[in-house]
Image (tube, rainbow, N blue to C red; front, side, top):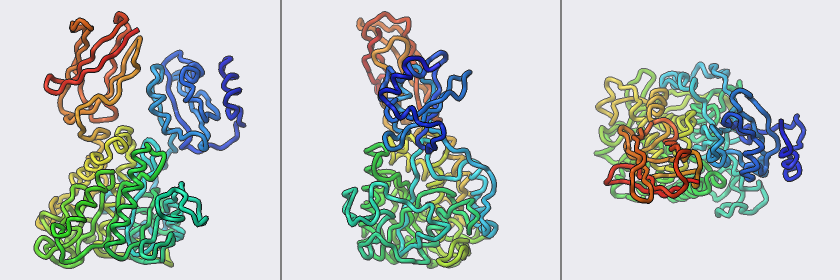
Length: 535
């Protein structure tokens, strides 16, 4: 029963009267579970900001008290309301309404030719996710720095990134980022928003994210992902492109998704021969800066049979914690004859030689070299971020650098160890997408972080207080104590830091006398104190 409050909502938010048949994007829908006997109108009355942009709501489960709420995208981004819903005492759970995914092999006609995807266990990983967004609805973006792209190819065009803050072809810099009409990335080679066609960049892009299950051509490692093309032809262009990416991802982090782009990977199927990164420190610094905002770089090594530590190569020798360097391996899991190698600088191998991709004028073409190996890594990075894990998605915005390191470590820990590769790479292995995903699931949602209380709510409270915290060590428990204002200990417990999802402890205070209390969390040498009020 909607009660009088529903008519109040109709008066102040007339969009609630929208017709039942209106189509609403899933990204603008929330599923909210309330505690038993809680009336949704009561929650909306107590927290009026939750009703802003609300167009309709309906009961999904009477037994579990679960509702579907639809918001107008032009007025409200539903995902930004999740924390506000979760703060309400009567809310058990709140999440984006996600589209279900069929778990079939993609129907792309040339998929059967893509031995490279089978070799790295991509089909098994697709049973968990096929890419596109995080579990909280962030649109995952992969940047590709290369010599050109055919962004209107029928098997790529639906996955090409669009700058929502830019108005197409109006000759203005609508988002004030210094680039006019950069709707689909930027061509730094000729200072233009338009990209010239290049078979190299085109084939790299297709391995990462050719549209999957669309009955056209091939499928990328991600069936759905946003591909951000950046055309370069020299080092200066690359530096500008790196700054462009840092600016976009920083804006996304700082605005919690309201601006910028959620760029997670940067594919570099190019390099600089016979140069050591220690002599060109600018490159390591740039990779570090990318990583600190949450962008990992997949770097191709040389296409010559050399030990890069002896002859030099960039990016191979840069040694950034946010860089994954890759060599070229064959269908039979051998080192390809013409590929750089190093037991200290090359992280792993990935399929390269004779991999399947797209042609400029066709829906199938072979591709070789370390340039084909690198996009397997960039594509895997993006796919891992789409793992259905709310904690991982939250970490990616809250601690982007630490989360990027967690993704990198999952990829390196998840390799298939291959006899014969141990003398050519750090890990001695070849990429395995499924095992990387399983590694990440085992640590899902909590990157190592400083010891801190992130949120404490509600405060004041009358029945319970939720304490959300971050810890640097998941394999231990932490003491929590409550003192009254006379310094008397009135409650104590041990809190285990789970590896999955949000770390939260609920303190029951319904039997506490009204007044102020001190919550002490952690051991003596790291203890954090917070005041709370019970009424």
